[in-house]
Length: 70
Image (tube, rainbow, N blue to C red; front, top):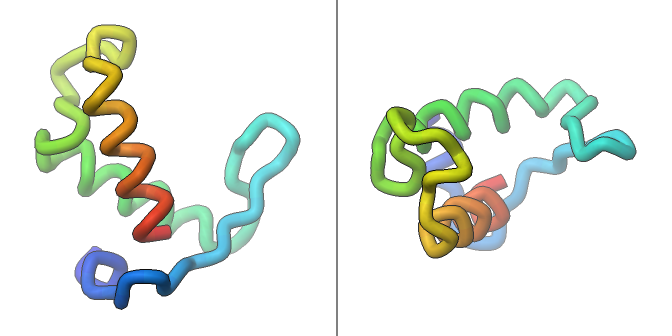
């Protein structure tokens, strides 16, 4: 996802979600792929841990990263 990582700060990819918070537009695959690159990096979201074992600070950093880059 080099294109997403290289975006200027403030550039956003609009993602529409349904009532359950699930992405529903044609850009949702970009979000899914971006989240995959973040999780595989291990910096924000180590994939070897269950989500409920990830510390709150890491969760907040991941959510902030997603808001900035998407």
